[in-house]
Image 1 (cartoon, rainbow, N blue to C red):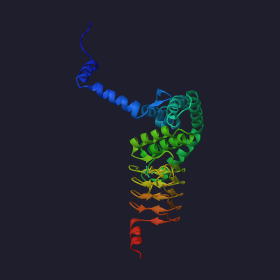
Image 2: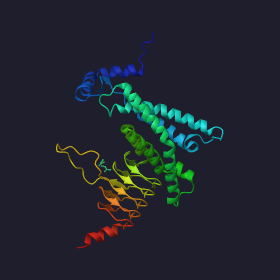
Image 3: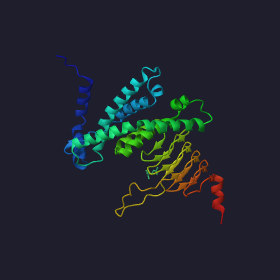
Image 4: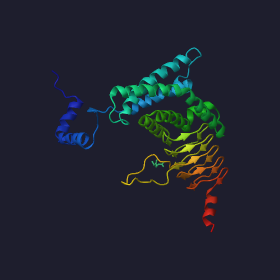
Length: 311
Ligand SMILES: CC(=O)OC[C@H](N)C(=O)O
């Protein structure tokens, strides 16, 4: 018999000497007594970030097969490729939706959650052609909105704003269909990959373009019209957080800007509160704006300073 210790056994022997059983028992008490991790008596199965990353890779490949799937597809193979990517994506999605539903439902039967996961997955799949059409408008907006862009392929392969809006439109659909936790997970994967933080509930019209993108934040109740362009470090945020009588923050109330069609917001601008940026306005770099502006406004830092000096 081999008496040599494996690295795992060595590690266990070492940790035994450190009194770890008390720590493990304390962690169990924290899990089971202080914070409830169970759903109907069972340990809750969690959605997996890794599974969601795989799902996103399959979805991106199904949406834009040559750019994100396989560079050598032909007329003969492309539809089969898309079908297989879609099939792989939807198998993962159904399971991840089921797991995520434990977090928005306290007591439903497992069989009901499975049915809801089926419905959400099917409806999501049927929305994909429309989502793709809107994404094409976003990619075209990037091409037309950036003098440095030399081709549509460059927009697809090299722009963080493209990744952010693809993930956002997928996440938004899942959010609307009743899978908010998965939607949030996708938004966070996009944030990690691009530095662009878009809440999945934010409503964004077609032909949307974020150039450069690092540090952009778009809050939960933001509404953005058609043909809007943002640059890096723009914040569409909340100005205040109203409280319930018990002191907790009111959830979900409209508190982020409405940005109408054809608006451009330059780098570093911070727009806070439920204000409206009128159609066709231009908001200059580093502007701090907490009031609405009418259509066709041109707001720059100099403008804001001269406002401050008026009697
Ligand atoms: C973007 C933003 O306003 O963030 C603050 C907070 N998370 C909220 O949603 O109100």
